[in-house]
Image (tube, rainbow, N blue to C red):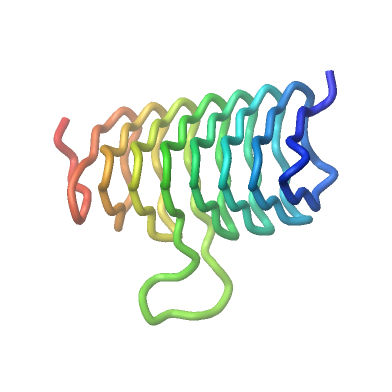
Length: 147
């Protein structure tokens, strides 16, 4: 089955997998790859050079910046922001990776160049300024391991 894309959205990429749904008022730039069976909810922004795996949910208002790699079965909560650059540093964005089955809670901010490990959970509202190990639960500003 072809992707299902709402009429009121701007999709510039041709690389969207089967059964993926993209809701209204999203912007998906040209050099984006989105896998199969994904759900991109309304008001999301996906910059160039982003790769999204299969069965990923990106909730309303999320902002995915350049250099982001999201593996399979990941959940990105509402209004999560992946930043482009570390404070005061310009240039090419470092690669940020979200590993398989990780979950990022609403309103979290993820600084560039870090890895959210497989199965890790980032608590709502957290600010990630370092890697989150596989299976860890991180919360706070800055996010620290709580479990």
